[in-house]
Image 1 (cartoon, helix red, strand yellow):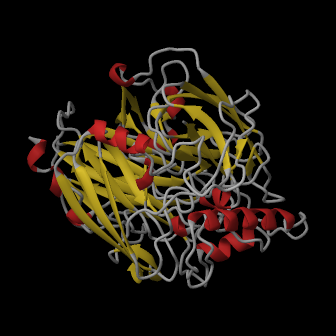
Image 2 (cartoon, rainbow, N blue to C red):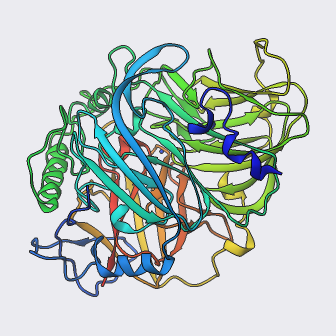
Length: 554
């Protein structure tokens, strides 16, 4: 029954072009030239392999994003029917409900136009950059070929102002994903869109589908932009450690990605030397605390929180019939905010997280860190109900509305479900057919998250991002990453190009919350060669240094 309605169920206001709701840290050019330590095994202290002198050709020890290993892996996935898309990134004026704001977006809307394909399809998308800065497009959560991952200075050259870039890859794994830039703090503008890969053998039965994208918003309000916020937080040392090199109009001199990598490394070193003392550091405007997150909830106070691009003054309305079974796909596209989510008058059945199925679990509410996704099923009651979204620890909220009848506005009390049973990923189990086979790791990599809100010196193992660093792995290994949060702040850690399993048969994820002074072991199978980012998905933490690279050795 749902097959007829799935492509036209995104609700009033955003329609089939794309939508969202919910929350709770040209052709490709050559990659950076770097040599590693051939045969080096990662030790349990997690020291990365350091790159040596740049080489003229591909590094002899590490798989290039454009190397034959990457092409061979993609060929095994097989080409499927080609689905063609175009996204234009542009400066525009957006209506977010409470006001109109000047920002950047895809196709003049937020969220951007939904990308929907079937697993096995080939995505052919042209990104046109009409922004005043260089940009890229990252496919969050997708296990795709490495040269399409959209990390400037690592897998591709930045897409300059006025230029285009053609992304092409097989979307092999079904699930709920999204796209966003991986350049500076552009993510915290309006540059994001949902990406849905449908399962051709979908086992779930439902009548309608609601794609819900959650966001925190400051761009264009009171003269604030993500760039000025990063400057404030960092005491003036700025950002753009992703190899872009642009802070103003985004123009760049022509140069190899090796040069871009050098510029990024020099920028990171310069920022480290210029770190302010606590007396110079600008503090957040007000205390933001959450017991769920283990203390400090975030660094940025946002004037608005949005559901599918709308503030609660003018919420999106999704219409259904009593008894309809709805699949809600929740995406947290925020820059600095975890969201607690509940649907008034209903319990939710969680079926997926980060694109992968779980043993179904019922709950009143969910907690989503930045970058996380959850799919839930609900059977609709008769009436008007709020999809309530609490900015965790920040004392503000957003909402959308589920209606079966009527048009009159309704003032909703805080739904009791927000304070009811709350589910987090560590309480879920992976569905049996996607659960990692128990196995001792071939390699253990220890990543200690370091830094403080006072000094704003976020890093991994005490080292701010350097594009020449590699944590080496080899194809075919079972790899265990031990994340140790040594900071007083929570961090949503994200791995590109892979999924990992949480301990004891836990769910398959690509993003996981680390609370302060906690540790989590995640296991992954090294089956997608290339150079892959590991970073905090708080965009201000990652851009200030909390990211590194997992590199496949030849």
